[in-house]
Structure formats: C-alpha cells, structure tokens
Image (cartoon, rainbow, N blue to C red; front, side, top):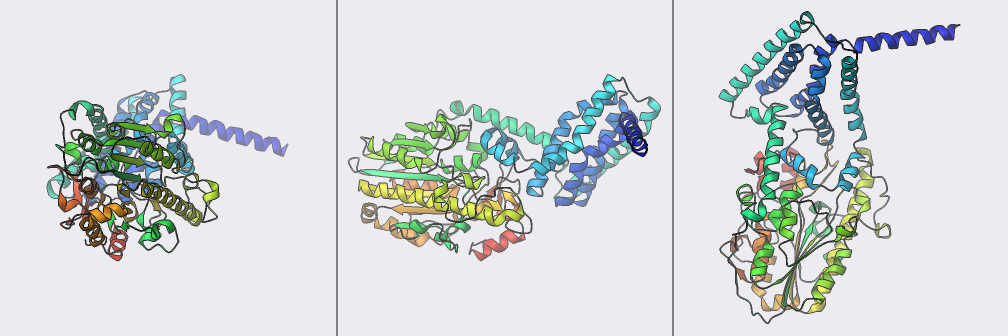
Length: 575
C-alpha cells in the first residue's frame, strides 16, 4: 500500500512538472536566460572592458526577451532560435576545451578542413561538454514541439512584461555599447558581443572559403620570376618536411631531458634552430605560409594571389614532388601541393598511414627521377591527437601510453604518448637523411612543424592547438636543417652561416622559403637574403602573430599570457 502511494506521488510530480514545462509563459523568460549562458561565461573569461561585459549580457538578453514577447506561439520562437542555440552550444564546448575566447573564424574553417577521423577522436574526448549542452538545450526543443502539437500559446498579458523588460535591457545594452565604442579604444563591439560577433565570423569564414575556391583563377598570372644560378648538370636534391603539431620543448635536440631525438642528436651536418616560432597556430594558415613566400604580414592580402614554392622550383627546371600523409580537404594546402609536377596523397587509398611510409614514397620519387634537380615536400601526420595512434605499438618507447582521454589527470600518459610521436619523427627524419646521404648529391633537408600543442602544461589546463588565443607551446616549434657533405664542401659559407644563426630568433613562415631558395641558388625578387638561415646577412625581425582576422600583430597583442612570456624569456627569445 505504501509502495503504491509512493508511485502515485511520483506520477503526480511528473504530471505537474510536465504541465509546468509546457507553459509558454515559463519559456518566454527561461529560454532567453539559457541563451545567455555563453555570455556569462565570456564575461568571466575574457579581458573585455567592463562596459562591454555588461553590454554583452544586457543587449542579447533584452533582444531575446523582446522576440519571445512579440509572438504568441512560443514553441515556434524557440524553434526559430535553433541556429542561435547551436552557436551557444558550440561556444560552451569551446569554453570547456580552451577556457576562453569566442568561436573564431579559423574554427569554422577548421571544421571544413579537418578530416572526419580527427574530429571523431576529438569529440570522443569532449563527452562531458557535449552532455552539458544537450542537457541545457534539448529540453526546450522538446517542449517547443509539444507546445506546438498541443496548440499552446501565450496571450498578450503573459507576453507584455517580457516585452517591456526586454526593451529596457536592450536599450541599456545598446547605450553601454555605444559609450564603450566611443570612449574605450579596447572596445570592439563587433568582435566582443555574442552572438553577433560569431555571426560576423561565420560570414567572414564563408567569404574566405569562396576566396580559396577561386584560387586557380586569381593566381593564374603569378610568377616568382626565378633565375637559376647553379650548374644544370650537377645533381641536387632538396627536401622539405612539414611537421604537424610538434613542439620544440619536447625535442632532446633542444634540451628536453628525455631522449626523444637520439638519432638527430648525433647526426653529422645537422643544425637545430632552437628559437623558432610559428606565426600562427592553425594548419590551414601555417602550411600555406611554409609552402610559399607568405608571412603574417602578407597572408591576408596575398594568399589567393601568390603561388607555391613548387611553382618557383618548377620554373627552375626541377622535378618537384608533393607527398602527403594528410587527407585532401580542398584548402590552399591541396592547391599548393597540386602545383608540384608529381602529387601523391597517401590517404587517397584509406586512412593516414604511419609517417615512415613516406620514406618509401620518397625513395621511389628519387630513384624514379631522371632529373638532375629534384625538390620534394613531405607533409607528415606528425603528432596529432590521439597521440598513441601516430606510431606503431612496437615503437612505443615511453610507457604507459594507452590512456588517451583528454583529462588533466591523464597528463603523464598523454605526455608519454606525445613523446613517442617525437621519437617516431626522429626515426622518419633520420631515415630520410640516410637515403639522401646515399645519393651522394648536393642535398639538404629542412624540417619545421606547422605549430605546437598544449598538453595541460599549467594551471590554465589548455589542451590541443588552434585555439583563438595561442600559447607558448602552440608557437614554439622545432626547426632543423641538414646539409650533405658535398653541399657543405661546395657551399662552406652557407654551412657556416647556418651554424652562426642557430641561436638567433627565427620566424618559420618568414625563413623557410628564403632558405630553400637560397640553398638551391634560385634568385627571385621575392627572395630576401635577410630571411635566409644559410645567409651571413640573416637578420631576425620582431616576432608577429597572424590573428583570427588575418591581421599581423606583435606577440604582445596575440593573447599570450604572462606564463607564456616567462617561458619565452627562459628559452632566450629576444622579445
């Protein structure tokens, strides 16, 4: 009997709760509050002016209340708000992942340029964030459908208070926004008021996508106007290896306590440039800059106009090869790679393969070429998360490395797995250098990573890369240059210059193109000897960062925090 009464009370409670959740007047007030949860988070995490933070709460909340108060079919209003709810959910997940920042333009571009396997791996480690947004935003959608099917609506008397309150809040928010924009140089409402800023970012992302789609037409007339200076009969091979997500702090070559690069540490003819920073922390920007003469200053205006480094080497008569272990994604990386005379994507036959498979394709390219001049670019899969899937199990040096859940408590195992990826990269580069050595050609190999990675390194708890605000670990990248005996013998000044420049500050985007062109003796008005690491006239420039709006800004305006600058100073960077 007591058990039956308990069941009856539970049923009664459910009926009352269900009836409450189907009251339109509840959702008129509650749904706008749910939609400003991201605004509350951003008010806590961002360094906006106080007036903007307050406006970021009042203006959107007021507008949401006005809209829910205008229409009697509250269920329809909730469903029409679905795109905004999706942005809110995306923003909350982003705050879970990075702890700060709005949804950037680059993040929308990352969605369309990152392969599905990587996305699945990442989403699998954001379960808590995904569950949170589902709990917040799914019930209103269910309630909206049920209110519509049961023809429930709110009358004018129920909607009028929300309409009045919303208008007052929106007016106050608009006034604060105007005052901030007129009186505070740090106030940029179009970039700081959610969700208006994100909507603007979506428009910008669409514009950039359309711009990249027209690349072949906009770059058709571009030429590096190359003049070769070396003997055409002399055998030359130049190799550029694009690393992925590798951070310099994890290379024993640059002082890391673990032996992650044992082969390179002992390699004759190799120079490591210990103070190299990437100018951006996203692949879809960094790699095109590495494969052309672009840097943070010229990227925004010229990425759709200039052609790749393959175009320069093609014009000089080289047999050019692009061998990629990345998936095609319809970005500038693909377009640039396809400018090589020979273009191979290993992933066309399936999933990414172990990076050492690139060595086999490289050997085929070199052995199968009858040309005296060969230029090869290898695009690795590198150290992308999940780290323990980037190397064969029998090459796991640092263990345990099996736990790949993206949680701070798992950092020791995540670092073990990450360090194994660096050890595996060491094997790849060593095998390529050995293969080049056997050719007895004038040869050089250059390696640099596109960006680095966060692995819960400090109290901020940051993980992965491509965050709207970078960190030291995302920007400090490994760069190495190997020169063959014959090249060092015939170009001693270049070898001496490389050694002299090894401890100077380097921008990877600025130096790769100039260095490779200089090594190959290719003259062009686009080549700057001051950017070549094998030139005695190499001159470091102040470090810059390519922000989300394709603006080149000093590091001090990039979003780096005090812990980042402390680490940069500790590493000897001249800032």
